[in-house]
Length: 285
Image 1 (cartoon, rainbow, N blue to C red):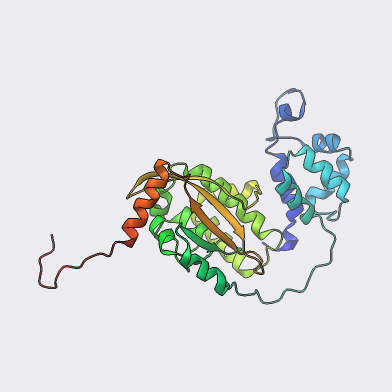
Image 2: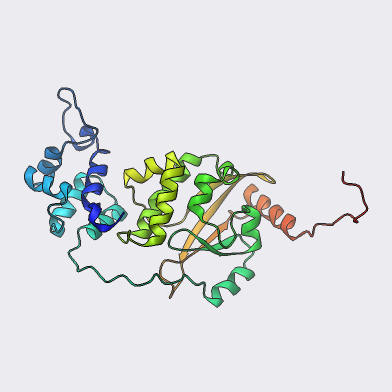
């Protein structure tokens, strides 16, 4: 999991295997023994020698020029997030001495904001840890509480998985966002522990991680199958927390006056209604 595992070569190979010859205008000739593009095809389309591209994949040349990386990004059909990630892998900047990871702390002002919001909201850390959440977020999912991890819950907790009708699609975006969040800093003990655990316990995570997909952590529409209010489609926003690198404020809201808005209000009323307890000597029914 450390830098010497040739992350640049692994990324190039994984993305090459996902690009079909037809998508880049190459004819299908004969039986292909490899998925996606061949190394020599990538090299030809990028305007570099096949030998040089082989050295990149094998990790024998780890400092290609920006021009070469951008050419490869075009051939591999990378979007802006994927291109930025590739450029980061090929950076020739000197390695910094690793310091003890800084503890992720939610600013006091953000905690006050969470308490004042009337929409479900929580703070997410760099490794998708839930650092703080308001009661309505916990009503949306009981796993949205401080101390939980979104990756672990979505992949390993059956109750969390059941919330997502399109679970497979949701996991693709989740893993791609996680890779973008971590970037090239993969020798952090927290990262190693989390990816190691999920790779051993989830076949789905292991397959997605091997694809090397990268996606910016940004807002999207999300549909949940909530046990109390049924199917619920919400807008999910992810806002940077200023002064706290890696922290995002995640907020859910519904389109105004929609059925989803009504369901969210209903969920909020359930959360606000105190539960009554039967007297100690009352029979349980």
